Length: 163
Image 1 (cartoon, one colour):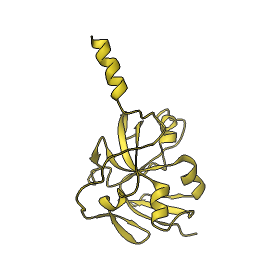
Image 2 (cartoon, rainbow, N blue to C red; image 1 turned 135 degrees about the vertical axis):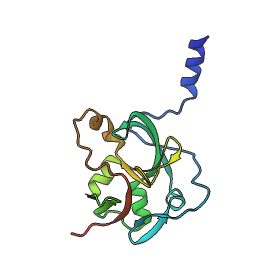
Image 3 (cartoon, rainbow, N blue to C red; image 1 turned 90 degrees about the horizontal axis):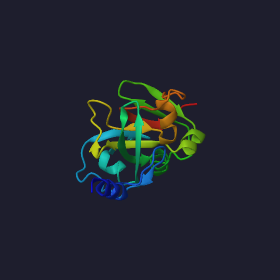
């Protein structure tokens, strides 16, 4: 009986594999709160970001070594919605750590701008309000065969990079 129950649970579990993102039918946060990030000079709230198509990925990474379900929007979708499609961009964290990404980086590995972990909004006191995750690189990062320098947390600004 326990094996039958286990098999049934596997059938109803979300079909999310590591290193991929899939659409998710989760509703955006119901109440608009304070602005959490400046994107191309516009203050955006979590609710505004989550009006874009939400995606999810189940993966382990340096912040959740045992694995978690991450939900957010594709970075490429947010950039397109804010007039930054095809541009080199800079993402700045609350501790001023900044990364620059070229369009080829963004389009090639489909990074996820995570807004939630295991169904809960990311806590601004720790890794929130936003994290940039790279599902296609997760296994290599966890195996320490790829760097995690572009896995940025606490994102507060996204803008066109100065040349």
